Length: 173
Image 1 (cartoon, rainbow, N blue to C red):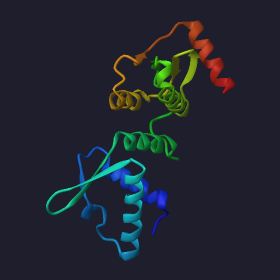
Image 2: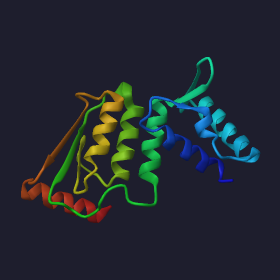
Image 3: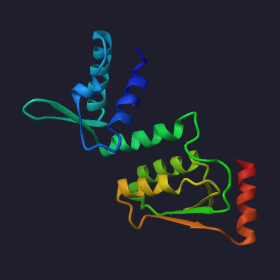
Image 4: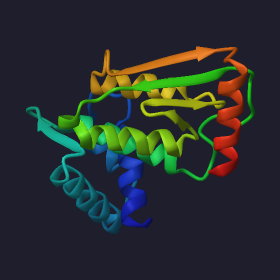
């Protein structure tokens, strides 16, 4: 049977994009040791607030919480395989992040994700990248309800000074 963390990752990925998944699908085709490990992982995910459980007359169901969606985004960014192409397609991705001080923990988490995705901070709350991660941040923006606090721009040109500053920052990092 796989390690606890890989079981939890598999459960989170199974629940991704679904309204709910019945318990019997999660436990399908497992021996008693495997079912125990899965049940234990589910219990931990529920207690950590990453998934929620609810029951109908006949079955128990699970679904991702908002916190579980965030965890899944982090797992995807930490994966060994590339999430998206790291070849420049000629477009610049610019993210403007403006979260107030009372939301500092969210701001720090978003900065961490931007750094992991290869964005470089060029001016306080302005992040720029050559890599196509805008869809990831569009999903994060939607999941967190950051309608005006996170702005994502994709453009085929930036002024030469900005381009040079960005390339210099990449070399430093």
